[in-house]
Length: 372
Ligand SMILES: *[C@@H]1O[C@H](CO)[C@@H](O)[C@H](O)[C@H]1NC(C)=O
Ligand SMILES: *[C@@H]1O[C@H](CO)[C@@H](O)[C@H](O)[C@H]1NC(C)=O
Ligand SMILES: *[C@@H]1O[C@H](CO)[C@@H](O)[C@H](O)[C@H]1NC(C)=O
Ligand SMILES: *[C@@H]1O[C@H](CO)[C@@H](O)[C@H](O)[C@H]1NC(C)=O
Ligand SMILES: *[C@@H]1O[C@H](CO)[C@@H](O)[C@H](O)[C@H]1NC(C)=O
Image (cartoon, rainbow, N blue to C red; front, side, top):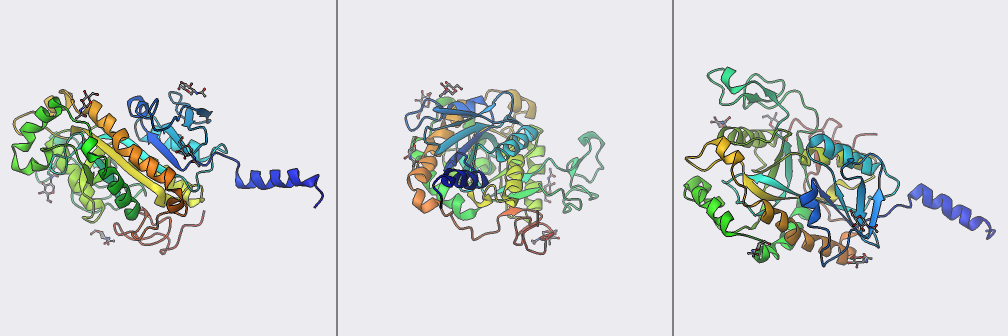
């Protein structure tokens, strides 16, 4: 080859393959407090490079990365629309090559006191979009409806949805989840807790059905529910617990409540369809900042508007548990580079990435990957 052509050819090669930063881990937070725990920390400096990407939230217009690009952090903005828009914009940016990147969703959430307590750090296999339903106000429901929510296309609560949009359920790589859980467990003794948090747990743990709400913060395997509406109270919690079970054919455990994960996951799924990202490299970590319902004897509105002593500890615990996972992936890259093979179904309710979902009506693509 003529030596003069070499730079030309390598330039062509690189532009076809993308010259972008290829982080080993990308941390996704939803708002400033969740992001701040990753800045000015002893372990690494994600403020060494700030990369502007068109289409990000105007509040958080930059992706932050370490000098060598192995760890990046992005704040999506809150709610489903911000999360989906930000992640979709990132995936279309030529500044990044995310094909082998592990995504660590790291945010706070409400928590079901039947399953876990405030301050705990959870890892989800299923994310369920519980707000995607018909709704009539509870004061106008038929006498035989336990809730005003019922799935689209159905005639009453408890019936499997007929009109699916495709974002109702996402299932993550269970082997990766178990690995992340085991790594995070090593940080369990360091999880932050305070006397105010312990006091807030006491009225729950006195009730036998909320025994799990007592005790110290721990690392827990349980699933997550998404809705733009910030719901609270016993009846809505039971409604969405039922929805979570129904949509996943009884597989998911309703545990954390948040406003973004299904949206983030749908944007990542679209990216996976074009091999821009690997959907089996996603970790959904949510720490518990508040309970999703009051303890016995308290009103729903008092619980929603009352103090949230676990807000700061739950934010700290995202870093305390999550940093172990980031470090394990970055420093153990030879074990992660090729992916952690999934042995469960991974993807959406349509079966878009191939395979047969273990929930819902079955693949819309005959078990094969959708052609895009
Ligand atoms: C890149 O930087 C991170 C921390 O900033 C470090 O842990 C890692 O070993 C460095 N090298 C590679 C190849 O990731
Ligand atoms: C990146 O942005 C942060 C503020 O968001 C700033 O503190 C830091 O100095 C910036 N880094 C560089 C390399 O400019
Ligand atoms: C939790 O964090 C607070 C505030 O930083 C600190 O005062 C307290 O000692 C920490 N508690 C534990 C158990 O680490
Ligand atoms: C949840 O489902 C159970 C079992 O079908 C039912 O008894 C209960 O009324 C439902 N609760 C709500 C709030 O929909
Ligand atoms: C899930 O439940 C629905 C409603 O009962 C059923 O139609 C569907 O076949 C079930 N899916 C799987 C994978 O079991």
